[in-house]
Amino acid sequence: MAIPDPALVVLVGASGSGKSTWAAQRYRPAEVVSSDGLRGVVGSGPADLDASTDAFAVLEAVVSARVGRRLTTVVDTLGFDTTRRRSWLTAARAAGLPAVAVVVTAPTAVCRQRNAARDRPVPAKVLAQQLRQLDVARADLAAEGWDDVVVVDTADTATAPSIEQPS
Ligand code: ATP
Ligand code: MG
Image (cartoon, rainbow, N blue to C red):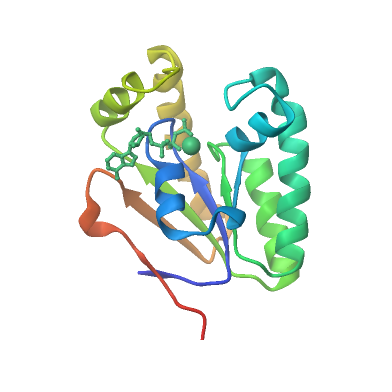
C-alpha cells in the first residue's frame, strides 16, 4: 500500500527492528525527526540517555513546526508512548495532514542478532521489554484513529510499501 506524501509518519518498533534504516531509504534527512539524532545534538551522542528530556523537547518543537506547515514528518522514536502518539496525531488532524503509523518489525531473533552487531547493543532484557511494549502499542494503535497502520517486516523486503509521488 502507498503512504501519502505529505504525511505525518510515526514509526513504532523495537531497537534494531530497522526503523531508521527504513526511514533513510524513503525520506530526505530533514523529513526524519529522530530522538537518537537529537540526543546527539543536545547531548554527547545518540545513546546519551541523560539528554532524553531535552532531546524530546526539541523533537516535539520540530514535529509541531513541520506538521503545522503540512510538511512530511517522520517521527523516528521507539513510538511506544500512546500519549505522545495521540498528540502527534491530533496535531496532524489540526493541520489537515494524513497521519500514518508504521509498525516496523523483524523476528525477535533478527532484532537480537542486529542489535548484537551494533556499537552499543541494547541489553537482552531491555529488548525483551521493548518487544512486550510493542505488543501493547500494536493493540492500542487500532483505537487511536490513524488514517492507516502499516506493518513493515524488515526481514521481508517483498512487503515494503511504496510512497506516493507528490502530484
Ligand atoms: P533503534 O531503535 O536502536 O534506533 P532502529 O529500529 O532504528 O533501531 P536500525 O538502526 O535501522 O534500527 O537498524 C539496526 C540494524 O539492522 C542496522 O545495523 C541495520 O543495518 C540493520 N537493518 C535494518 N534494516 C534492515 C533490513 N531491511 N535488512 C537488513 N538489515 C537491516
Ligand atoms: Mg534508529
